[in-house]
View 1 (spheres, rainbow, N blue to C red):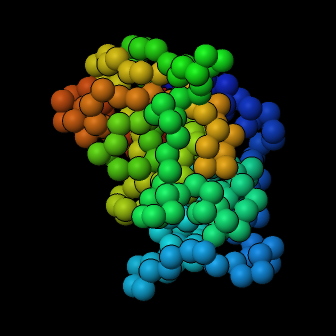
View 2: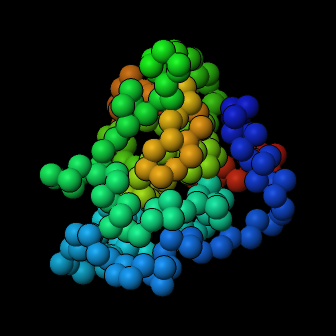
View 3: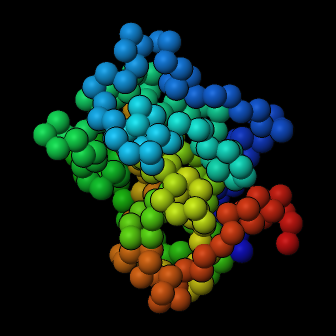
Length: 229
């Protein structure tokens, strides 16, 4: 089992900032900076909606991610609304007719000076570690330990849909080599981007059932990063 060079660099950067890493509450969750914090949101009306900011599932969980390794991946520098109030954030990054996320063009890959996406096929080898925030019906993953802000994904990807996978976080080991479309992420959803993303040619669930990906305990990632067996 091994991490990509990109993952190792991400982890090394976090370590360089100081160990142990001190986490701070996301300042975008401080309601004092907005006259009417939840103005422009669409609060749900069930008890289940109470776990979300402003009771709006799109804004992610009220409780900031905790527990290893998710707390380190999300990190103390993640600001989920990019300094905006929740309603302003939704106005900027959703389709105003249906309220759904307005995802970036070109599958979220960065664009070169000619307007073309920066991406190419890459083969992941046996033992490579990748991860994902979201359920297994999706087909986007990243090198394990990529900081959340560098993935340019919305805060709703942090929602817990399955109690077995808090904050929607999944880790996989490549069991048999697979080809992916790889490239840097463009800035989006008020996040900096710049991380490496992989677009799979099948869903995660299909690759798991086909024996190409093996589910791993997320906590095992920390041991691997620490050089433990």
